[in-house]
Each structure stands twice: as C-alpha cells, then as structure tokens.
Length: 368
Image (cartoon, rainbow, N blue to C red; front, side, top):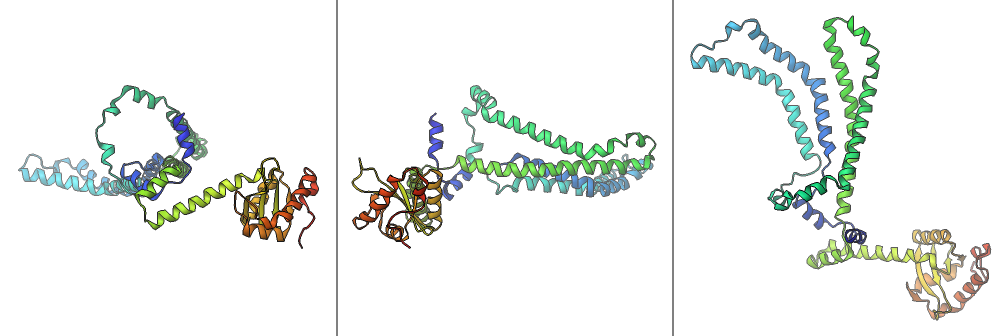
C-alpha cells in the first residue's frame, strides 16, 4: 500500500542527474528481444550471403584431404605434423571467417545497440540477500513473472504465425519433392530456410521495437520523482541554471494543473470570446466577493472554455470585462474592487438563468 502511494506521488519526470545515477548503478533499460533480433538477422545473413561461399571454401579445403588422405604426413617430423595442421586450420578458419564475423557483429549490436555498455560494481558485488530462498520464490511467482510469461506466449504465437505464413505455400509441394532432382534439393531447402528466417526476422523486428519502447517507458516511470525529491536535488545542485529552469517550469505546470482542476466548480466563465477566458466562483454564503479560479489567453483560454463546456459551467462573452479581469485579477484571490459592478451584473444574470441555454449566450452589459 505504501509503495502504491509513493508511486502516485511520483508525478515528475526524472532529472538527468537521477538517470545518470541509475545508469552508474547498472539500472538501465534492457530489451531481451534485441538479442533475439540480432541472432535472427545473423542467421539470415549467414544463410543468404555467407553460407554458400563458406561451404565452397570449406569443400575446397577438405575435399583434397578426403580424396588423397595419404598426402597428410603425421608420421614424420613434428615440423611436418605442425605444417599439415596449420594448413588445415588456416583453410577451415578462412572458410568460416565470414560466418564468425557475422556472429561477432550480431553480438556487438545486441550489446551496444541499446546504449552504452555499463559495468556497475554494485550489480556484480556479492550479496547474501540474493541467496534468499523466499526472495527467489517471490520473484518466480510475482505479478511481473506472470506478465513476462504471458508476453513470452504472445511472442511465441507471433513467431509461429509468421513461420506458418512463410512455409504454407511450400506444403503443397511435398508430393513433387519426391520426384525432384537431388541436385535441386539444396537450393530448394535454402530458399525455404531464407523465407522462413525472413518472416521470423520481420516479426522479431516488430517485437523488438515494442520491447525497447516499453522497457524504456517503464524504466523512466520507475525513476520518476516526487516534488519533494526534486526540491532536495535542487538543494544539492543549487546554482545549476538547468535545474533552476526545470523547477520554474515544473512550478508553472503544477500551477496550471491546479488552476484547470478548479474550473469545473466555477460559477461563470467570462470570455473575449476566444483570446481571453476568466473563470469566476461566487458563493454568497462564504465569499465576500467573487474569486478568480483560472485565467488564460489564446490556447489556455480555449482549454478553460472546453473544460467549462464539458462540466456545464455557463460561458458569458464580455470582451471588455474579460480583458480587464485577465490583466488585473490574481488566481485564488477576490477580483479587484473596480470590477465588482460589472461582475455582479454577469453573476446575477447567470444565477437567474442557471441551467438554461441562455446562460451560455449573453448577458446585460456585454461589450461589442
């Protein structure tokens, strides 16, 4: 329960300092499907480009040994044995070099494709808490483990569908394969394998993209901060212009959210009609004068009008009064004395017609 309340209070986006500290601790977003994507891409490249040439070079190296095994000197001097083995290993190595190169490239893309490689001492330091049997069972049967299991099932279904889509046209050829020339079988199998790998690769690209975006979103969400944490960090880094600007912007945003949340309880919204909007509240029993709940210009004015319409708050078009209130009224403060008479006429009109459609269209004293 406490964790849930803490999460609700964490409404602010993490700062660069918080993100950097998380990365230093090894807490970085990692998408497992990127590794699968790299492996599938490597497999496709190997079959499509590297395998034919590698097979030819490997055959050129090994066939002479198979056809003339007597040429291999293993009973001579150590130099002869070493020379024969070196020649054999060099030939096999050169033949398989493109395949190994693709595998190394795939591993590098998988490791570095999601950002810089972070070596966090805190992650590799031994901890007795990691040996907890209860903690292990808790991780296995947790909600996150169930979510991962369901995600794995969905991925398996997607890959299975892609594979079926790729090989389905070949199923009708099974009878003809029996009468097919043996020399054509390798090419047919290669085409089928490429088609299958390409379909699975495309499905994996989609899954990896979703996985990367989702993991990064969850990572940033987990690192969100409360406003108090942000203030504490500001005290630690006081003087940093970027932090000061961020705090000012966040205060303005909090003020805007609070202001907008008060519009539904307004008695009336006075507009210009589109350039200015001022939301006023008046309760004779507890207020000596009307109070300005919200005000804004242009897009903010349109937002205030929209919220007022959604909540049935009367909207009165009075350009002179709207301009005057926007320039002089303060949020959550009574309106200035010089506007009492004009606002009183508007509120009297609204209260007299409360609930009727006329309350949205006009009022006595309306300016041009």
